[in-house]
Length: 424
Image (cartoon, rainbow, N blue to C red):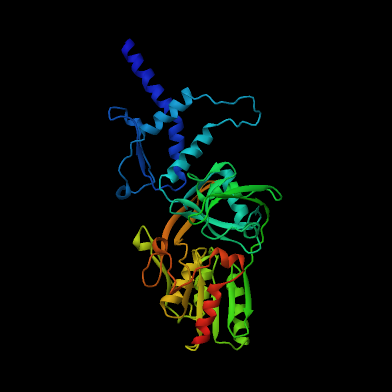
C-alpha cells in the first residue's frame, strides 16, 4: 500500500473517531422523539459517513438536511483548547461531556425565543417535579416573562412576597447579585426558591419609579384555593386563587353557598390568580353556559390537532343572575380563559385592569429517563377568536388600584363591582 493510501485511511479513521460523540448526541435526540429527521454536517466534499438521517422518519416527512459542522467544530475546539479556572476551590464542578450535551440541548430550546419552552436536565427536572407536588419553600409568588422582562404575575395571599409589599406587574431585574436579563422563568424560579429560613434579595422596578431592593425570608408555601364572602348589600363574592385539581369541587361548594344565600349578585374575583389546569376553567365555565358552547380554542402548529373545549352544560343559573369578574395584571392563563368566555357570552362584566396575557400550552416531553423538555405546543383563543397571549383581556370597566389605595387598604375595584351589581 502506498504512503498516500495509508494517510487516507488514517484520515478516514480520525474522522470516524471525531464523529463518535456527535453521533451519540444525534441518536439521543432521535430517541427522545425530536422532530429532526437528519443532520448534514461537514463540508460538501466530506465523506458520506458524515450525512446522518433518521431511519425512523417517513420518506415524505424528511426535513432539509442541516449543516451541523459548526457544532462539530465548536465541540472539538472546546475539547482541545478550553482550560477551566478551577482556582483553589474544592467545590468547583468539572464540566463533563454529558454536561456539554445538556448545554447543547438547552441552547436548542433557547433558540426558540419562547420563555415557556425550556430543557430540564436531571437536576432541574427533579426541582420541577417537587414544585408541582407542592414540596417546596420560597417567597410565594408566580413570575413570568412579559415584554422580555421577568415580571411578577401575582404574589400569593399571606405569603412572604405579599407581606413584603410585592405587587403584580413588578419587574424583577436582579435576584441577589444575578441579573435576570437572560434568565428563563424556570432559572429565575430556581434562584428565588430555596431552603426555608434563608433569604433572597430582589431588585424591582415598579412603573416609572427607580429600582428598589426587597429582602425576603423564604417559607414553606401553602397555596389557598378559594374564599367566599357575603356583603351587607346582598352581593356574594367568590375569591379564587388558582385552578388546581381540587378547584372545580371547591368552586361547586362555593356556588352552593351562593345559591343558599338567596342572592342574584355574584362577584368572581380572579385578581392575582396565575391560572393552572385548563380542565378546571372549562368545568367552572360550564356552570354558566349551555352544553356545547365553546369555552376556549386550542390552536396547534398542525391545524388538524386544533381542539375546541366546550361547556359541559351544567348551566344552572337563569338570566336573572348578575355577575362581575374582577381581573388585574396578575390574572393569567386559566383565569383569562374563564373570564374571556363568560365575558364574550355576555354572562359577566369585567372590572379592573388588563390581564397578564399568558395564553399558551406547555407539554412535558421526556428526553431521557431523567430529563425532559417543557415545550409550548399550542396557543389559546377566546370563543370569538381573540389571542390571549397577544392581547390579554381588557376590562369592560377599567379601575386601577394606586399605591395610596394599597397603603390605605382601599379596594376601588371591588367597590366598583358592588356598585355595578347593586345598580342592576
